[in-house]
Length: 475
Image 1 (cartoon, rainbow, N blue to C red):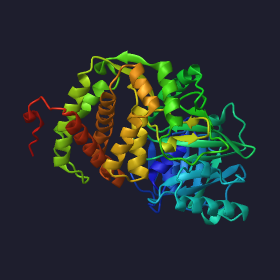
Image 2: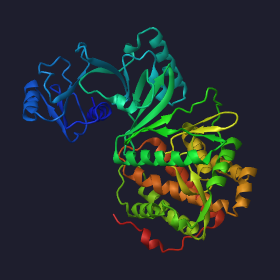
Image 3: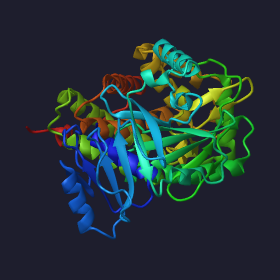
Image 4: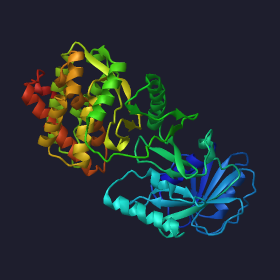
């Protein structure tokens, strides 16, 4: 049992907790300790903490795999949570969970569900994922899904209130995705009514995630006022720090993983309704770009497999790109999704349905989303070489829809392409440099970005005008 799982369960199920006690005599929990979590080895230690804090609101986690003897009717215990305990009080609720490969909890769903609702939170479309989904659906039909789960826990609660995230929605069943580990971590609730998934609820678990969820709430309000006809987006709701989103998945979905005129027409409509001209230095992210370049230049130690020499070369390229983009007095800016990829949208015959707007803004140079789609899809899904990616970029540049926008706003495609490469590398490389266990895809992305920047500099003769001495790194 990962201690971060206990922390997430507490945040999901209980709005107000002063501290939690974890009875772990077998020392089965691993990972970092969280503030206001007390780990003890015996029931007497649990009772001692309860007696010392008679007015606090306390949750007790029982990892001992046996029923405890301390009195649940004590006023300061708001809930006790027992893992893999077969018997519990009448007022309890049983939850199953499915683990990630590292044994941390990935999905949680109540025993009362009549269908595998958590599969609506499973976006992987590979053949293994399809087999997994079919297997779980069959297990539900045979009432034997408990054989496929990783474990269960039972909550005996006086104030269990995960339903505080359901406010305003009719909910028969639900499931929880505990989120992807990292500084942007959010839990996602899938809410069902009459066997149909009606809403998703984002619940931020970190300060950075709170900022992203707040941004998405603001952006969705602005998007609603645009009255877009070629792009369908969720309606945001809910109060507090969480965000309730309507499920925009259409009944019939086109299986297409390439950028098409549907995407470009939808982006064109967004641009035409939100376009404005600004200098590159006035963009909200420009300060962050400068800070990131400075961080990359000063990096001297990397212990996750990224070549330091590669980082030195990329830093030099980034300075050249920054100067090139800065040479423009103004660039047309407009609404940008920020993570415009196949896994954040559905396609139908007439429009695209786009969700996850937490990275969006209204002051990014045109074509960012189109270029991002090609890079992310080509590198992470199709595993294309850069030569193939470059040919796709050229095709988009020469698309009549894009050419019409270039002429209408009297702009230079190369400057927009250069900005994209500048932004995406300065956003992600500092994050990758600080990660100890870097996933293979990050290396793919870094290599491709480097090749793309080098190709652009050579093609457009983008020179580096600042002395190379500022890039020297001493060990």
